[in-house]
Picture (cartoon, rainbow, N blue to C red):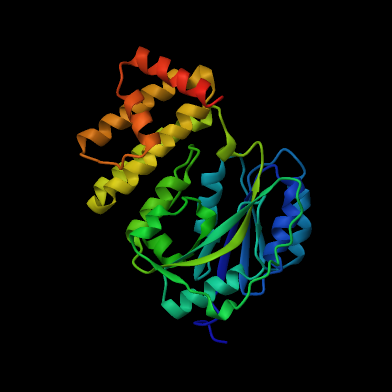
Amino acid sequence: MNHQNNPLVSIIVPVYNVEQYLDECLNSIRQQTYENLEIIVIEDCSTDNSLNTLIKHLEDSRVKLIQHEKNSGLSAARNTGIDAAKGDYIIFVDSDDLVHLSLIELCVKYAIVNDADLITYNFKVFEDGIKLNPQLCLSDVDNLKVLEQGENYFNQQHFAWLKFIRTSLVKSKRLYFPIGLYYEDWPFHWELGLVTKKKFHIPVELLLYRQRKASITGSSGKKLLDLFKVHSLVLNLLEQYKAVFLKEKFANKVKMSQWSVLTRIDKNLLVQALNDAKRIDNLLKNKNYKYELNIRILIINFIVNLPSKLALKLAKLLRVILKR
């Protein structure tokens, strides 16, 4: 096979304190049915035995280890991987997850067939402690109905690990993750969608997402406040790209995020969360962002637009009703 139909794929795997999951993750990558890979592992100064665990995987010449000199976080690790990538395509895998053994083969196939810059796919959640076989049964893979994505892309989950991307696009547009913030996938997801013309989706669960109690997505602490910061970043991107057609989609996601934060965040952070939600709400109003009116958005919108003391009382009442 020539370079055109056997492209090199760079798999970027940030590692930090995941010694109990790392073997499973890297094995699911190394056992891919598609073999022309470079597996870039960025070790971000783990304090557990992660480094020793991954060293044995270096017996596979495709595995390349990069060690940070100081702990810099997930965004910085991914950015390091982007800079190091030599492949025709880039894919991100979190080091506590598993990937279907045919993931790369399917992505390469449909990227070539459709001359796609971006392939997305679905994921399956599993609880930490449950053992899963990444060789799931895929029936009739040759006749999968791969979907061309227009605006529907922006309805998808933001996660970076659901994306198979042409490397030249990432590097030419300088698509990086914001350092120092949680929920860093938000701005990357939106800007990637804005600069990508040929987007396709494989409607199959090709990534196995491990649900951990300590994960960011399950957080109720200060990390949640970063959602408001990334909302501001994405809002600036939409204005920069003059993406008027995405105003409602973005506003809907912001409002549903506000519901999630205000009903989940620790009680001692509720006042700050309300203030941040009010700030973002004012930005949306000033720039004429509209949103659809479902029950959660109506409730959150009503609370956020009240004077601060009354808003706080109603937010607390809502949490009591929801038993949060």
